[in-house]
Length: 275
Image 1 (cartoon, rainbow, N blue to C red):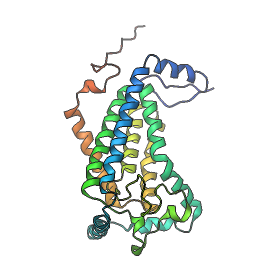
Image 2: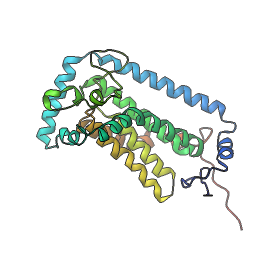
Image 3: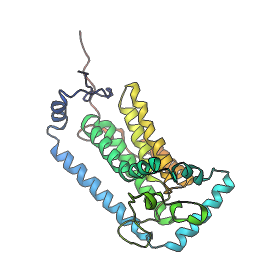
């Protein structure tokens, strides 16, 4: 049986079946009120984000005009064509189907899993990760409103293919179907922004050399959001830029105590180990 290190600060990700339940119980003991508060906070923020996105859900003319203008800008900047990446997936269902599944499921499931793990076992890392995710999402919402943008999959005349429409597992439906999703919110790519933040959080919160594998998530997400026709290169660059700005501003705007465990006070020093 392999040892498990889930409860110590910066411990590795080693896993063992025995003791997991006890460690989880110890981690969440007496924190029911905090859990309810965090869940309520995240729910309110998520609903606010969804409502905010709807302001430009019908701005079709601007969204398509911005998309064509962005393609022209990418061409002037010498960026590679997104269709080059799409060609890897088109007509190859053994790539396309898993890519659509990953796009449809990994964005939220990985975020929930990492945030839950951080909250239970790395609360000091949970708080700054949560703060940066909120800041990034809020900044993205402002960009969504100011710059409505049709995704590449809506521009077949430029050689793009809606991979989800061809192979299924679409999370949007047709552009004319309405619903609660704003399909003109391609800029920036929160899929990539969140994936990069979560990967950094895992790397920062653990010591094991295996932690660097977490970076595969943002890399794979980048390839998939472009390959499925959901984002442009500039969507990804803007998301990374917003995340970098949030990370630089966070220590200046949020006191260190706000990332502490438990009450909003300084993190208590660990008692010295005596032999």
